Image (cartoon, rainbow, N blue to C red; front, side, top):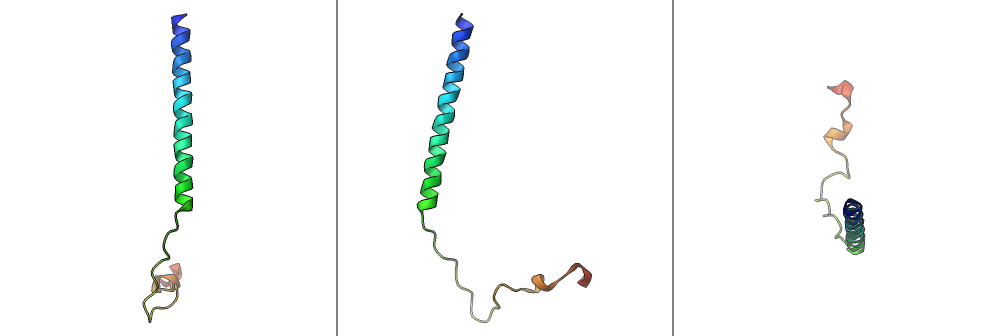
Length: 62
């Protein structure tokens, strides 16, 4: 009988811990979603838009 009570208490403690972690993660995700991150830094003048030498290379060029 004591073994069954111990197993039940352990399962209950694990369930409560899982629920607590789930609620904490959900709150953390909500805070991240609500936070407005700044825009990326602008490109310095004279640089092309998103193209680099690496973008033009193919395996045949090597």
